Length: 139
Image 1 (tube, helix red, strand yellow):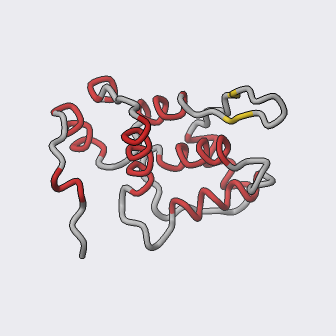
Image 2 (cartoon, one colour):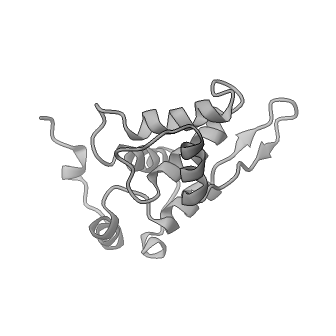
């Protein structure tokens, strides 16, 4: 088994407290923080548009409509994935709501991804883009 690179990182105290409470998963506050920063570029005029921020209930209802059950969802991870997919792929490679729901299932329940993959993807994006996280606000 490979050693996670997080072994070598010294986390801020508030980040450590976040991880103690939620693990590598989205709390409601962290999800809302992440979703507020998402946008979709309008291909016709180049403007940035805000995609909807989905509640856990909206995600669950969408999945139920297509008889999709998630096996590995934790806290707000599926809500993050749905919002991210709408911002990045919806009405392009994901052409309808059923494909969107199936994408959420495939992403959350991907068997070769370690626990916390969804959150780590988001955190990695923040690191690469220089987006700071005020961890004390997420607690």
